[in-house]
Length: 287
Image (cartoon, rainbow, N blue to C red; front, side, top):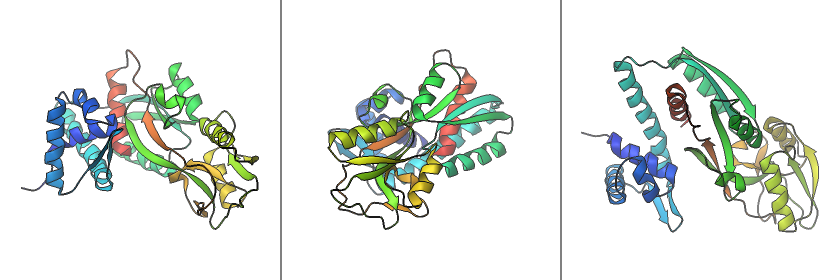
């Protein structure tokens, strides 16, 4: 009989979210050796490697990323079926805050699927910059928050919930745009209250790359329009690449960039069961 074991898939998701086999073990109530065995059996079943291992931890391979998407959906369906047969329904009002850097197409599909599957959930969505989102969430303005954390940046170390997706940052410009070495980079960015703006400017100053702030957009959509119009260069997550926008062709002389992670903000003390289940539902729908 072909197919995957749900518990092995659950272990894969835990390892990917935790970043290591050791950190994943308590999440699935297994020993580290049992987690390793589960992953080994899953890779045998898949017929290919699902994780790359290094001193820094583990990361999904291309095949692992594909299977993770399926795994999250399968686990969510399994949980949904269990709750349905036990007569547990998901209904209520949920206040969701999402970072401006998250793909708008994904959010549109999410709202459509939620309306079909959970018609009794009333969802209020607010789009914010990640720092403003974290502050509002800390004050209790939202039930669930999805923020973007930059690897190695201070915000990334303040503690977050599960990782929804990881992406690379990239230097972007209009298709065919070339950066002239020695001339100041015409930088496009969001306002200086944005953590990615702050990171980009600090990186350029640290590497002594001359730049001028040529354009400040109020949101990512405006930034994409400015990029496509050829007004300059921006540091953005790779999913921001769209019509008329491309990675800068090397050699461009700009610093290497880290990855970012879209992460759920951690549950607050006293969080209701509805909010916990709703976060799990959102995670599975966006996977």
